[in-house]
Length: 96
Image (cartoon, rainbow, N blue to C red; front, side, top):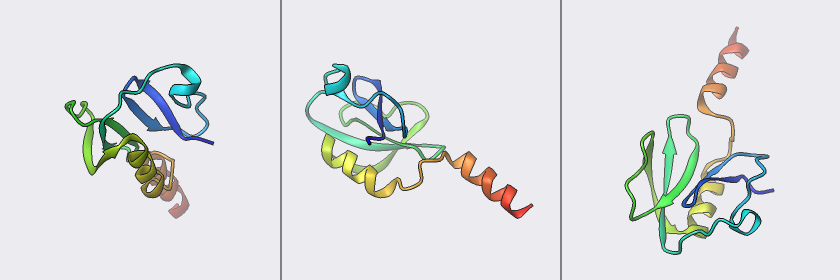
């Protein structure tokens, strides 16, 4: 099961169980070229076209490459799909 969802023609971010899977299933063409991995304050990962400015609310994670390499990198580093705020809230409730 894929964890990538389309939020724009060049942005994919992981959302487990989301029905948006990728360009073949929804017909949105992905531009060829290089991408960068970006991360937001909730520690959710995405890819963004390398030649475009990083979108507001995201920062460069440091990895660049073709689309498949970036998605493979995200699969390696993003092991807990829960947003950071949820993880912290769950840890806090476990301590109480």
